[in-house]
Length: 136
Length: 443
Image 1: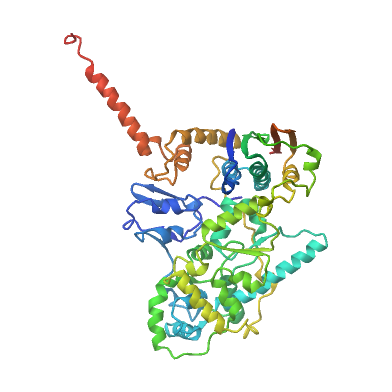
Image 2: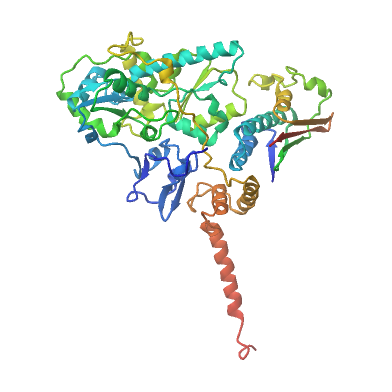
């Protein structure tokens, strides 16, 4: 089954809403706690990234018998050097977000750690697309 | 294995006479466990976590917690009262802890053992749990995930079982102070004796349930649970008559467990969160599940506002009670010096002996494919509903109604707006029919 979440780019207080909704759905499907935990962490980090860097975006999830696929698409500034962005501790988050405790440079690596398949495409000036799969 | 539906003997009950079928409680229930049917707000037993939120919010007093009557103590040779520290905060400062405890003896109890004293022992065990666990982690052995979540509040444990099963390994595997107190009174002080009855005086609806259906252990040592509300007045009268005896033993570290931050203060753990009120607890647990909570050792989570002081069976306003409790904390010793008259329970004796498991009461169908199809239908149904969450259908939100429809416990026309649409369509059809003339008259 498919779910779509619009992530608002200007209201930080709404970040985490998509993750909560996804959790609600997964728990009703009887999906195990370990998977739910992974999915909520990956999704939450993705949402936060979209708010901080890209002014929001769209998350599409597809839940099938074999796994949960989450596709995060934004039309933000894009990532010039993906391998650098995937390095733990590397962050380009603006100061106002760092003051809130974000921007430790753990977002993308944490997303990758919590899923079984991770793909990222990005074009500077166009946006970023992340595809994550968690096997069931 | 999950708990069987309906097997949990909840303490929260509906007084049908008083329930007017308004929708106040259904909106406040954190697990969406209440539905208004035939004008009465019924509780779905397998979803209820005994948080008492409905008791607190019902404007008609129709939701109440069933506890044991004070007369339950009759028939026991030795009657032991184990009062929660919240009890002290219900009376003004003129009534010292000694006075309150003396009043209990005047009421017919033979002995008192303070739950606050056991709370100090549980605090020590929690410290040991953290230390042992840190040592195990240093040796590279299996350790508990951090932060550890206090398991003292039964509503929080049940909330974790139902809504946050991934956090079950975080729960502190220790029995709560009231159970520790009951075991000390029964199996330590009166070891091997017959006819000893131990009675908990509680501000908490969840504690009533947990005594019948323990979380983390096989059987409770308690013989009865008396709601604080029920003993408040008789105790007040008894206090006036009772000669004041020196009975209070618990120190500040035990007393402060009654209020939010008390457990963490007693523990002396700075890398911790103390959270009160069920919606705030849910917020913290969501953040923990999302991995967005930072480096923490301990979470003290209490379902009631201000902690146990805000329990649904209390009499006093929780914030007035909090100040009263603080005043008593200040006049108490730092901590209990030495347990007197009994061998204190060992760490092992305070550990859980039965694993706490997830409750799958929210799962749509055991077959995941079937559940997915149902979920898809819920999405479609929810789209078609007005989204006002008015509650007139008896469900807390349009989404919850959509879910109920797909689960087969409600129908679309339960929605007043959908019903109106249907009536309008029907009316149009009638108008159209009315315009048709019999062939003989049709000119």
